[in-house]
Image (cartoon, rainbow, N blue to C red):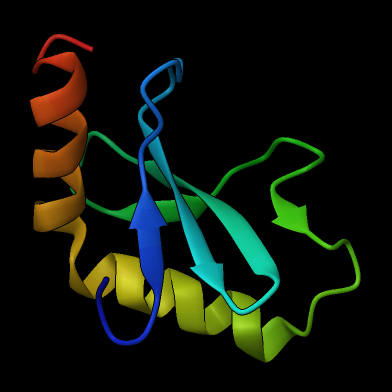
Length: 83
């Protein structure tokens, strides 16, 4: 958990490198980009529910950006660096 946002990488997950960020009932799929930055995934279901407030989505993305190093370390611990 970083800045009030819970992040998870699930054991059976897949490429591209990403984590799931949660605040209350809002979830956002956050891609971990090769340059060390983060971005909201382009997949259709990246934000749930679809009518989530932009401020909640921004909060998750901001926390992910501030802790991108730790989130990449989480991914690498689960899947290895080559993933």
